[in-house]
Amino acid sequence: MSNSNENWHAVETYKSLMQYGGTVLRFVLLVNGGAALALLTFLGNAVTKSGANLDFRWPMACYLIGVIIGGLATCTAYVTQLALFNEEMNRQNRFTSRSHTFWLNWTIAFAVLGILCFAVGSLIAVFKLTIA
Image (cartoon, rainbow, N blue to C red; front, side, top):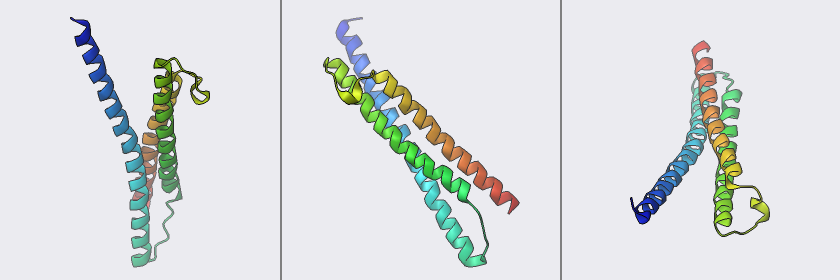
């Protein structure tokens, strides 16, 4: 296999990874933000029609924490790319004194936590609806 062919494959793989990473971050922000909006809409409608006193503070807290974590993941993803760029250019930067893998690990951890926030919030909401 020629060197240019290997380089092409590496570049295309990197582009693919960047696309998937962005998709995961959008997913975390979209599902948590959407779930918070849907829950507020549901509660507003339920209280208006039936006067029910439904307590969905924990699911809402999970969704809002998920949005915050999604924002943190987006920030660490940016710093990951900045660190990688600086490593490639042999530059030092006060924000990226650590290697890009340090920031990448934080980004992955935040993304997983964001997905877990959505899952936990949804499970709590379903549980509360089944016993209400």
